[in-house]
Amino acid sequence: MAQNGSVDEFLGAAVEAAKKAGEVIRKGFYLTKNVEHKGDVDLVTETDKACEDLIFNYLKQKFPSHKFIGEETTAANGVTELTDEPTWIVDPLDGTTNFVHGFPFVCVSIGLTIGKAPTVGVVYNPIMDELFTGVEGKGAFLNGKPIKVSSQTELVKSLLSTEAGTKRDKPTLDALSNRISSLLAKVRSIRMTGSCALNLCGVACGRVDLFYETGFGGPWDVAGGAIIVKEAGGVIFDPSGKDFDITAQRVAASNPLLKKVFIDALKESE
Image 1 (cartoon, rainbow, N blue to C red):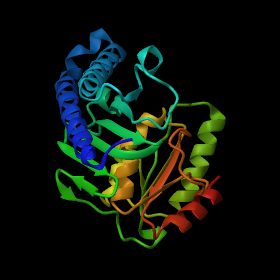
Image 2: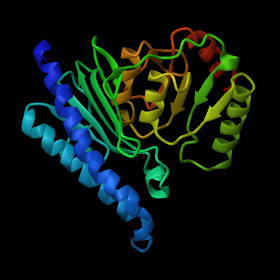
Image 3: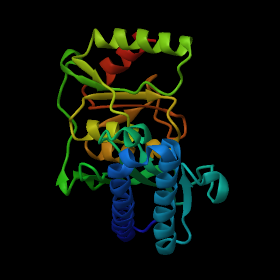
Image 4: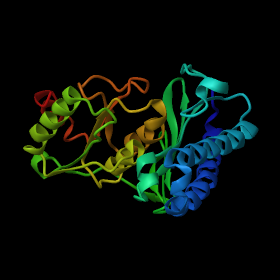
């Protein structure tokens, strides 16, 4: 297990890795318009893969005994199962669709779990140059300044963030639009900005009051943001109201004052 003294070292390494990957994303972001002929998918895959290799190589050099779970390489040379060992869980580019379109909500997300619990989180948006960090018991920060969740107590004055997912079959779309109209009747407005990790950070810094998403890619979408939300005084849970499970592809987050009414609203919207 990690010694207390080394958590700062883990954070420092994660920040360094995120910034290196962020540089690659930033360069690619402003090139996308010129490489249409190559095919958007190729470009994104290459950027994704290059960033993940860069992050894992950097962290493996520093912490050779740690485990690694990444969106791109898990099957090839990482692990798929989360154990109690210190495990780096990485999304090298969250917000791929945004990246392709030049919409500036893209980020690198790096989380470290110890004993399966999120312990260190770094989420870096290289386009807006926003670095969110959180370490268990030490608070959450945006570019080095402490952040806190909102103090909103009323659903009707709350901003809700969610995502549309990737499925476009009629039953899924009907369920989605019914759920959104039910929620939209109860909150101030809804945002879909295309990055699970940045949505969590949005709750952490009070930009949005509420967030939920189901069916996202995997633990790499939430591993970095989960500890940042908690350390900013927020709560993270399953949209059903049960405890948050990092492997379940289901997440909700809010300030503690809104949790109960938010869960009730989510249940009524199903």
